[in-house]
Length: 350
Image (cartoon, rainbow, N blue to C red):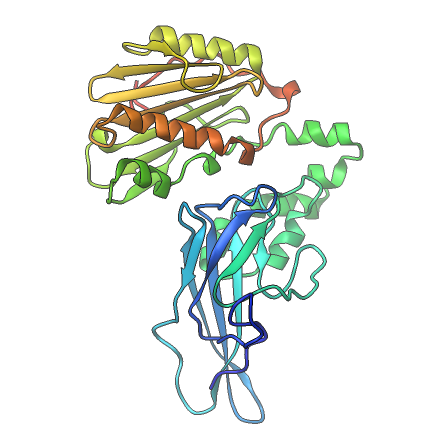
């Protein structure tokens, strides 16, 4: 038995939807309306059992991630609970990406007001950017969800604990300037810059990636990296991304260091204020400087993954286009990272 759905089948109709599903839609940035890839989308079904006196029977979750086009699809669960008196009572869709306010199909954050704009098919989710004044503790309480959501939001747990202890910057700072200084020590996170689906879309690679950090430098408030390691393949299939957000002067020094030390580096004018191409062995490299933002990006791609020189340029342009989605450190905190010894290896090996 299935209860009547409190949401419509599509945004353009009043016909009720189906609690069982399937569900599909697209997730976009609330400011730019640009599709967001790599967003966790989880569907949760709640079942009850009994006639007259009812109690919980089961809870199921199905999770996925949006593709580069921001689209998602949550299918009907395969193993539905069965038996006399079993009824599907609720379905909830939860959408989560770091750096944004979570989205639930039943209520809104932070007010908890009921949501009335959810549809089963063709749903459109617009995620709002996270603000430093918001509470991670209240956000986690609002979020709920099963294992997939908890894993994606695990980084918020420590910040929520600091809030409860009264030691979080969100609870102790009183003035905007203090808030800016407190936020400046946050770890740089370049996750939005490049996704697995975007790499595949450029190179045509159909295999799996193990996504992690590069091994040559630890993540800090002004440096982060991403390593797309092709599963069961040599390093010539890997893609690496390094980003320094160190302020204008230090960024220029870092770019000059890359230009002088990377193998066969040649200056170009393809992206930003300055760019370069390099090649060492079976690896091709590309780097560019954004002087006003104080950012240097360096990409490395094995020739088995990027056999055409245009591919690494397209990857670089994708990363640059997503830079507005990254929270960069304040100018007061930059320029503290020493100029780094360059490496072309996607795996981070010098």
